[in-house]
Length: 280
Ligand code: NAP
Image 1 (cartoon, rainbow, N blue to C red):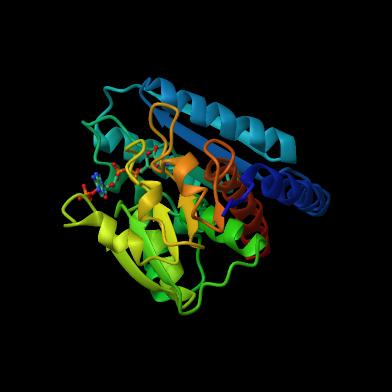
Image 2: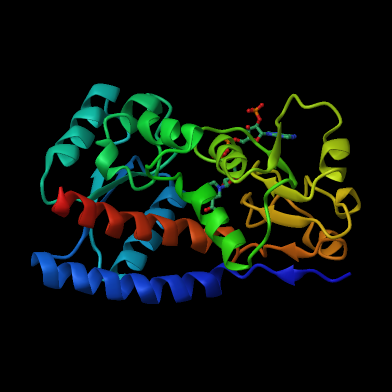
């Protein structure tokens, strides 16, 4: 079997065209563009790149991006104060705090300084609770992007066995919650999971979210399973693409699968936040 590619780049292109129209309509209705504030703490080169890519994507669809760059040595209180100021600024619609923050900053406290109505990256406790309870709210951008990618290929989820590898609060955990809300039967695996391969072998859908290149081997994949590779380390994904694509029915490339969908979900939720705030 040779798997069909889940082309996040192409799905994103189509979604961004529609978002551009929606952002233009918002500007006509409210006399300004939707605004996303990106907060970068410190000088991690990869984080710089991600923030630049997000700002460029904003420009592409007609969202104004406001970049806030904070010194790596700031205290948790000082970072939270900056984020709170953006939460209170009526001209900011969405806030993205780039993850990870430097080790001296309490990331959870900084995330929770974001007004839930502006949490377009889906990282606050409120957003987490909304995903867990299946109520209205913003989705964590990467899991939300994966759901949009699966839906755009009409991949059935109800009753399927999904194995999520990774349990971080921004990716693995909310991924499982969103799949559960769509009636998948979800198994979480993590660094203490015994016999990872036996879990993957029984999966109809595998989501790898670890950051360990080549961790998931093709021989573990059940014939016809759907394989989503969210991992990204040393320019590689978590899944051994060549061997897995011989067994899977659908598979994401790295790059060009999950990454563009993460950014597109962030943009979509920013346009939505702007409209919801302006109408409230
Ligand atoms: P993280 O916070 O470091 O979490 C990694 C998870 O992997 C943890 O839950 C960890 O388990 C688990 N793990 C580690 N070694 C394992 C092993 N040998 N077997 C099974 N599980 C193992 O990372 P993250 O922020 O969730 O990101 C995960 C990956 O996704 C990274 O490569 C990151 O770059 C990528 N990512 C991509 C996007 C995108 O848009 N494409 C967005 C965000 C992140 P424990 O909980 O037991 O430690």
